[in-house]
Image 1 (cartoon, one colour):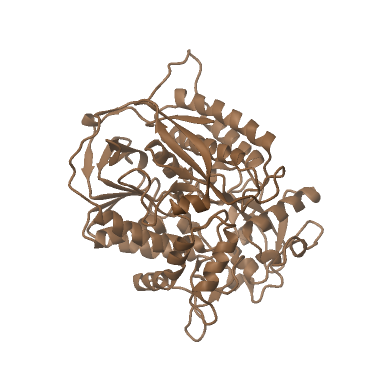
Image 2 (spheres, one colour; image 1 turned 90 degrees about the horizontal axis):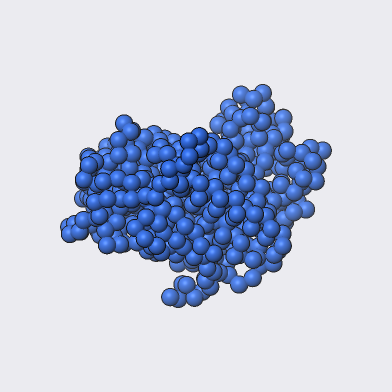
Length: 554
């Protein structure tokens, strides 16, 4: 079982393009990348942030629910750790979980010092909510359902106030340039359309997720798994890409973009019903609507099939306060479509939400390629295991972002090497009239992933998906024009190929990976994908399962 792809997305002579020199280059400006940049700058290094869109188009900005942290009396680090490990279904790294959980209070304090305004009770203490998988109310939130927006706001303000940080928006990161197996710089397409090289021996990938691999998703359009694909091409090992979390409640209005309806709604008493008004979650799990997200998503999916409906319904009529006040953002969205959330059932269905697998990193965020680091959703840190617990991701970005930024800054050394001057890519010259239908391929891939790599999977569907993806991947590699949408497609196909192969190998049901033909849980193992160089133009990789215990001890 082999995955082939080109080493670079673009062939270019490095002598002919502009070059910018920094100590650290970070791809992505969400909570993880932004906090990494702040701490690298505080360590005295010059930092560049390269963002594909503007400074607010991030997964962080769209996060509604909040950030989990032990901040209330009666809660404890031990409880938060226990909850995280339980939801992670045997694949969490306990040391990483402990480090992130114990860093929660400091992360909240750091955000408050930046100027964040979190919701408080009348006594001035933080108003913490409970979400699925949590035993206690420990989710800090802002403006009811706009926590990510508030965190992004204060991080952006801090970034702009630092003289050591330069932000390059609307700049498409293409590939990591290496020399003798180590990071040398980042090739990118600037906002003006020219190709540039950012030279830095420390590259941090913080590109977020890959929800756009799926037809139904809560992620912004920029979430095309670029960081994982880029790291893979640079030789980084990838882990557990079959685990993709689906959020159970996306606002479903035909023809409109899918919008997340936060889990915080169910935490305040919102319940799920089918088209007949029947509540179905109590039969699916003892915690009903506050069960882990994979359980709620699959239950909603099965109820849709059972009742022959396109969605289920979220009932807010019995929440513990006025929903218009509790959830102003959700109220505004639903009101636009004529839905009164206090009395009207809100149509919802599951959607791809969080990419749990990613680039394998150590406790400091180092990938297997020297000089390349990863943090946040594009990294496999060991925090989430086989299923992410709600509101742990913003926490991860704050805690591990600080560590990665500091460690990368401390690793900056004087450059002594230079890369090959020519970056090559194999390109075919097709007969006249043959061209790549990018939009059609993107839609076909998203639909296939939703049907065959979605909430429920089986061997025959996965093998068929692998065949289709391989065919499309080959066509895209040979025919893709030099433009961002084509590069995104190749990144999506790269990660879809890796994820599908990993799903085929995992013959069990664990966390968010559910196989109808292998419903039992077997030995806890990680799926590991190690790329290897074939020649100067292409790389290949093999997918294997490795015992979680053995990997940790090694």
